[in-house]
Length: 112
Length: 112
Image 1 (cartoon, each protein chain N blue to C red):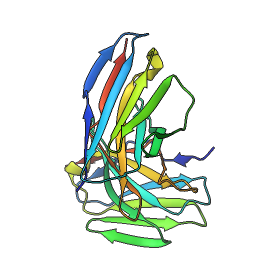
Image 2 (tube, rainbow over the protein chains, first blue to last red):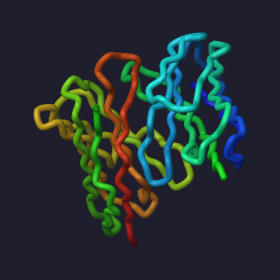
Image 3 (cartoon, rainbow over the protein chains, first blue to last red):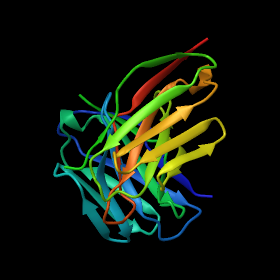
Image 4 (tube, rainbow over the protein chains, first blue to last red):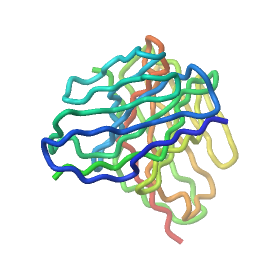
């Protein structure tokens, strides 16, 4: 079965600092990968998805970017964080014929 | 703008009762519908999915879908305190890539 690893689990960053969140997937090849963000008390917002190495689609204009340097690695980055970037960042992989998403444990970001 | 709407709650039910959670969606082309459970501070876990109009049962959970009314619901029978969580409704976006749009969730509290 698939396993998704995310790190770091928690981080506190000052406004204007860079960000790098990493996600790796085990147990599958050529997965569709997704980055979602959940702001406090809000639903999940799709940020990026990728159907293959180097193929990234952005859903929401913002100061974040994503990259997929390897088949099972998905990275979320920012050059300069904003207060509004605070939230719970979730990496997900689609599996099964139903297309259901399976989530990693998440990375909780607080921007001060 | 494709949307998924849920009542934020909290929905409070006594232990052993039936909890009924509802969701409406705007994309008439959506074909797949999912319910996730999210405990506080944790990532979402898939409960079940449904494709076809009608009911689908899995243990104590029943998902109901009415595409004409663009309405999805989740019934939890014999509710337990361990069912206390936020329940997220997710809808597959027409157009592929298994992209899901999530509602903001309904918080369920089951009291002994």
